[in-house]
Image 1 (tube, helix red, strand yellow):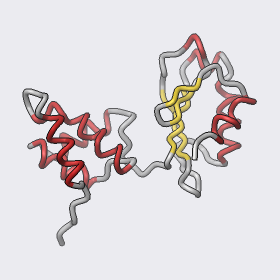
Image 2: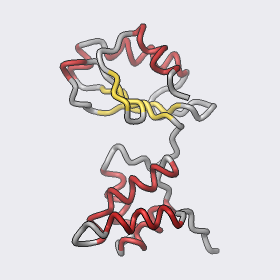
Image 3: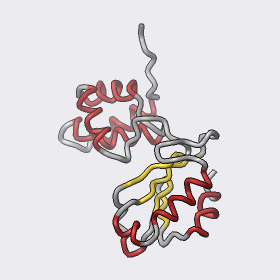
Amino acid sequence: MTTENILTTAEITAIQEIYRHFPEKSAACIEGLKVIQQHHRWVSDQAVKELAEILDMSPAAIDSVATYYNLIFRRPVGRNVVLMCNSVSCWIMGYDQIAARVKKQLAIGYGETTADDRYTLLTIQCLGTCDHAPAMIINEDLHRDLTAESIGPILEHYQ
């Protein structure tokens, strides 16, 4: 049984352009994973195999990098990924109340995706913005100084 390639010519070209800037192809592994995720929202096993071929690496080596970084998603995620910071600073500043509001509004728990594929809710250890805790990132947007009242308008902004 042959599996059809999922990476497009444009994606392959982008990855090749990236590795040209490194002394070895394998050094472009993380950037290659980012290219794939940017186009597919996550990195499938098939995408790992294809990237391994492009970078002259084993699929296991690519997978070990992909699973090490918590911002490379190895399972399907929604159109908007909500990363709730659960650092000590965020806990002290009301993380539990904010997290409860997000879970209630989205009607999902951590590691889940809404039925309409709009949101996936995950935690992240630290966003490095302790002076503005509690905080979360949605996609690439940082939201700081969160309150229970600010959650609704923030989430509604993302389609």
